[in-house]
Image 1: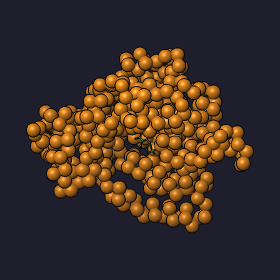
Image 2 (image 1 turned 180 degrees about the vertical axis):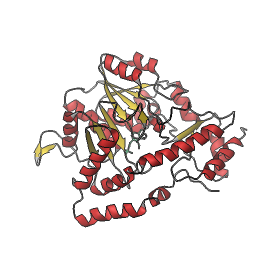
Image 3 (image 1 turned 45 degrees about the vertical axis):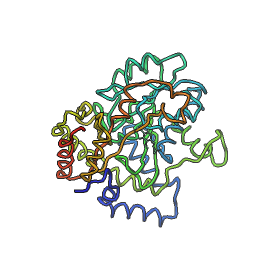
Image 4 (image 1 turned 90 degrees about the vertical axis):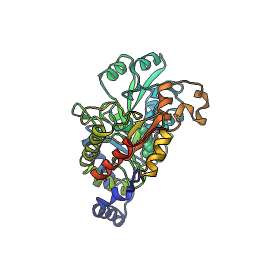
Length: 369
Ligand SMILES: Cc1ncc(COP(=O)(O)O)c(C=O)c1O
């Protein structure tokens, strides 16, 4: 059997006719930016997430960068202020902070839950701390009441990075609706993936929404009248039309992911391999299914031999990247160990139960050497 880590063609094929029709309508409309398709998708996605506003932007990194930039323009954060970020994240979360000349403060995560370490988080707060980037990494909801209380106590802006957790729920509400703002990526491989790049910010804050919209459109609140030194970062009509189709299937797709994940949890039995703590139903949409082992490279080779594609998320944590040499000396042991031990096994809505079983057997037959 051959099981690629991700087969985007298979994912797109499930809705090919509807996607082709939606894109064809945009093509023949002659209107490609700032039109009805974007407006509709923004409205549908805001309703889905449960916020009053949704602003389409070019990608997830821009969603994060523009959110911080807008808070700076609104006078809520200033250059040099500190922003807390979980050390175990995709580099984009950190890039958004440094791009705005803000200082990222890396906080380690907990080994079992993979959530940001609450104790370390509180210890990292100083009078210069203005915001927390809360990343729902791997599709796991990391929001909870303790996080909310800390943000309230220290007057921190809570910004969710929901790039990997579209559709995830916590107590009846969706991630992306808990923070002052939330940033979403529609990179094609995401749970809700576009046919190219795309992103949004969701928020209940009208002023923030208008500021982001303005900055993302050259700084024009009115045509050709610039109130900010803006840039061009817009979701285009074709991506919005495709996303609107795929949004209708997101819950169904996430259910399949959750069902396969349960099968993994119930059947993966190998002393050399650790699974993250299992979460309550609905609080994880399994964008990535990570397993951890000190024998990661051997496990990857073993699965490769059996035709199973895997990926590592992520081999070098942001604070150890060459571009962040200022932070290379930091020691964040849990994150650093995860980077050495993490292996992502295939999990998506196009996989069959036979494929899931085949992967389980392959993992269970792995012997460290
Ligand atoms: C956690 C996280 N944040 C931000 C991003 C950036 O999104 P994009 O690739 O759309 O710029 C991604 C994904 O790529 C991500 O996984």
